[in-house]
Image 1: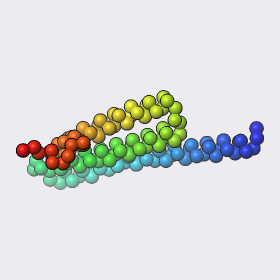
Image 2: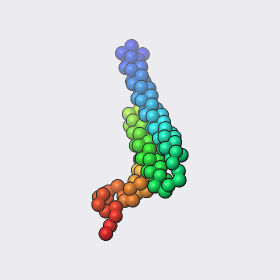
Image 3: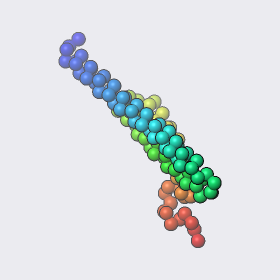
Image 4: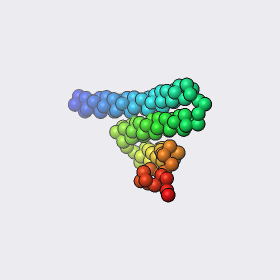
Amino acid sequence: MDPQVTSAFDMTATISHGIRFIGDAIDVFGVMTIVIGIVWSTSHFLRRPTEEHYFDRYKIRIGRTLLLGLEMLVAADIVKTIAVEPTFTSLGVLAGLVAIRTFLSWTLVLEIEGRWPWQGSNSRNPP
């Protein structure tokens, strides 16, 4: 085999491995964001659990943490799928994951803010 072809193949494999590592790092960061956010929110809630508005704050903090973590997990899936192995099967799996996570994000926004993401902020409390 030609040394230039071998060198190009090795470089491609190295780049692919690096991109997969970056995607895995983003995955870990997303999961850690969720875990740390839940621990932080729970520690704040446990200090004053007696009043109802503290439960609402707790729910909002957990929801925002989940939203941020889900966004990071979607970004990691995109990096790993598009950059490493862009086949029709992997793109289909990515589309399914993004659709599910988008639906989860929308329902979390609905739960936190009382409105769908595409609705204006003034539609939260209709007259």
